[in-house]
Amino acid sequence: MLLAQSGDREALDLVMKDLQGRLFGFLVGLVGPDRAPDTLQETLICICRGLPRLRDPDLLPTWSFRIAAREAFRWIRADRHGVTRWGDPSRLELIPDEAEVSHEFEWAERLPGLLGEVPPASRAVLMLHHLQGMSLREVGEVLGVGLGTVKSRLGYGHKCLSKLAEREGFR
Image 1 (tube, rainbow, N blue to C red):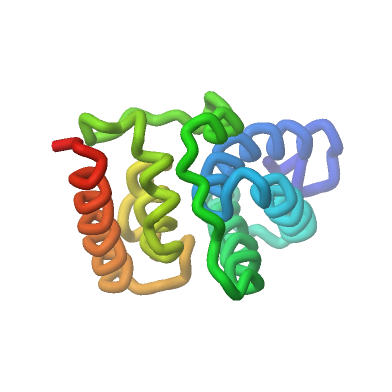
Image 2: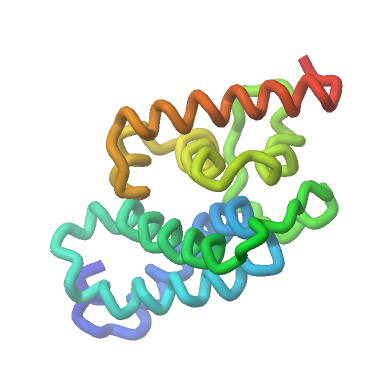
């Protein structure tokens, strides 16, 4: 990490390769597979530019997801009609294997498709907490919101997922 911060190209490539799979999976969940590559590119550019100013290398993952969330929400805000629903499971093949994490729900294989129908703010919290394994405090740091807001969005997201799961016939 220190070599990457000092300008070593090979070290920077390793850092970027380590981050991009998880960030891409997160971005597919927020902006869909059509916009995720462009959003990832913007995210990685911001990370490269800001890396020399990152004081604590241990904060790299949280800091990177914060940048990715900011870029994703910028895309979402630009789309006046909201994010296109992308619940078609065949389109989820774009998520790299590194982004796979075990889920707490028996209908885990359908979770990514169902997440596409949850409002973006709650979707981001659900993805960071359940798919990326971040604590609620870390999620708040990434999204720049308080712990109470994170809990509220998580609760709302769970409620939306429960309704969607019920609609899909899951228990």
